[in-house]
Image 1 (cartoon, rainbow, N blue to C red):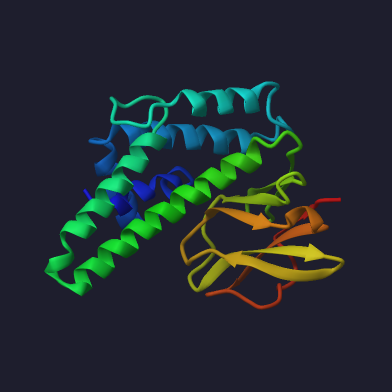
Image 2 (cartoon, rainbow, N blue to C red):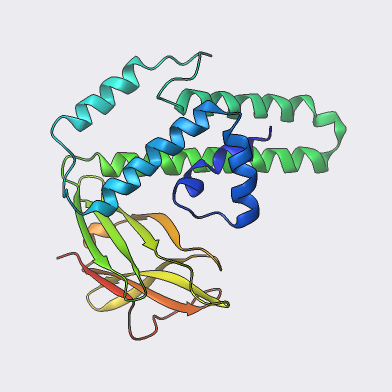
Length: 238
């Protein structure tokens, strides 16, 4: 099983895979308990973010998370509620395979190395999201999309960063994509465009607490340099 299939757990939990990727990952889930558990955990987090029923983490959440990290074994063990050590094992195993297969040719090594780097980047991104969401000063704000769905923004001044979570009811028409924007003193800056056919995304934005607003638009693929009017949603941060 390749490393990249495990890295799809986050996009799968947010319904950000295409039909082919989703079918392949669901076959993988039948055989991989750690990925099933992590997918369940990420779905629960996304559901709470989209709920709008809380604006800060529950009391004691940060301490509980830190305690759990300190007590987590870093060696091979049966699947538990924490899939992170298992993810690290897969990355380490893949790295060993890359080294062992070096004599097979530079092309194969490059492909495997890129897969390992992709998995590591995904794991780092997930860890960053969790850090922001569990910051003691995190504030959540939410607005509905005119096209259906919602956008939720989590912002932490202590982390000097935030998370934008887009969860639309469906993807835009063919040739169109969702794009998010940060707006500072009336000046918009692209925070990134989703791919065609995508309706959900989680983005980490450094410096987000300095922005006044977060906007969402529907643009011609692959995205625009300035937002089109009218905005599909506008979240006020100040």
